[in-house]
Amino acid sequence: FIEEKYEAGIALHGTEVKSLRMGRCSVKESFIRIDNGEVMIYGMHISPYE
Image (cartoon, rainbow, N blue to C red):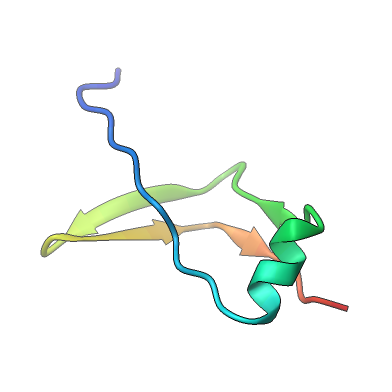
């Protein structure tokens, strides 16, 4: 049951960006938590850039 809906961005650096552009990212089992006003994502996987 969804009570509220949020939209957010994510800050990536260096090779994370390259891997993401190549489609080497999975958010299938990820979730977020809001702690002290900060949103953190857990369970997201970005494969190493090769």
